[in-house]
Image (cartoon, rainbow, N blue to C red):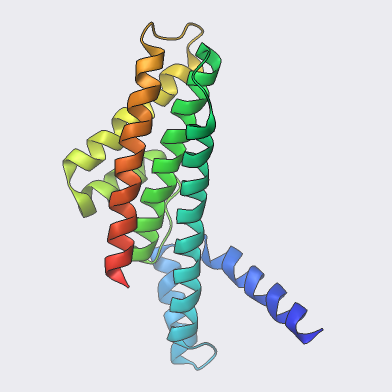
Length: 170
C-alpha cells in the first residue's frame, strides 16, 4: 500500500514539475533551502521528466514512420507527427537546460535557437510552417509526398541531436 502512495505522490510531483517555469524553479530552490525537499530529489524528477518528454518525441516519430504515405491525408499525418516529435524533443532539451518548460511554439523555437543556433531554430520554424500548411489548407501541396519524406529525415536528425545533447548533459 505504501508503494502505491509513493507512486501517486511521485506522479503528482511530476505533473507539477512538468509545468515548471524558471520562476517556479526559484520557488523550489526555496523549498530546498528550508529542507522540505532535497535538490537531488528535484533534479531526479526533472531528469525523469526530460526522459519522458523524449520518449513522447520518439513515440510521435515512430508513429509517423509507421504510416505509409499512400494518400494526401496520410502524408499530412506524417508531417504533423514529425513536427510534434521535433517540438517535444526541443522542449525536453529546454527543460533539461533551463529547468523550466515552454509550451508556445514560438518560444520553443526561440529558446532552441539560443541553445543550438539559428540553423536549428530555422529548421524547427520551417517544419512548423509546413505542418501549419498541411493542417489548415484545404488542398495539400502538390509535392506533399516529398514533404512527408523530408519531414521524416529532418525529424530523425533533429531528435538525434536532442538525444545527444541530453545524454552529454548527464
